[in-house]
Length: 413
Image (cartoon, rainbow, N blue to C red; front, side, top):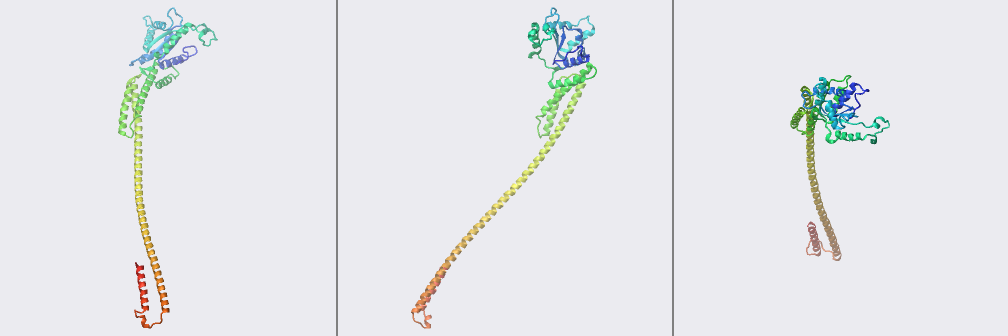
């Protein structure tokens, strides 16, 4: 990131130091842009970080800061050291050298600067040219910039920004994520918000707090990610998963490099354990309620299934009853058909009887007619002839009786 110019006539010492501090503490590479040479007063601006580094290195395994580059623009002494990285390294070694004739404070400052950064380098840049410096019409065209400046600029940019030269931000040797960097930035801004420049000890404490917050959040993420695959509906398995993940999260917190005293880390470790247990307690209660609701729903579904089975059984019985009723109705219809058939037979017999009877009547009438005709032709006979079977009339009567008997038999059959 780029920052506004610092340590100039338009900014206070606190403003400049704050900007300088925030840029160094949140960057993996700090490019310290100085004019023409590396002066003693420019080294003094690093005094704050020298004091900070002295405190931070107690019990730490790494330098608190990473790469510091002194970029000297408009280098005025090319005869003393050539432009570029090599000349910058030469001048840097001279300016940061610790020699006996120096005051002890200057010696301390230089030793602390070397110990605060894992790597310190220099780069010397030539003047960009008269057109750039003095002509107000300069609009950034490359043709107006000196060739030497452009050549060294081509060296500087990849020297800083080539993929193989990029440096990942670390705090106490541990790589940090964007979210963690934001946490550090918030803590640092809050620390520098007061009316006075904070003591290095205060900044170190803020860094310690931020590093422990970052470690705590990392451990929390591990725990939460593990819970995404937690067993459902099994409280014992859930408890075992929690115990395992809690142990892993606390172990990750312990192993994560942090700044500051052990007491601070222990406080955050206890807070981590308390928060994760509280989260699990809520999760456990939710799971219990979920299991209870599932149990109640299953019981409800079982009751509904039982009611449905009973309704189906009743429907089955009703269907059987209806079938039996249908069979009974069919039997009744069959009996009715048989009765109807019997009535039909009886009607036919009655018809036949009536027809036979009619025939008998006709036959009797015919015989009567014959008898009348015979009587009209025959002379009167004495009364005794009626009882004499040998008389013609007696014989005719016998024939009539026989015909009636025969007709009656036919009708009965």
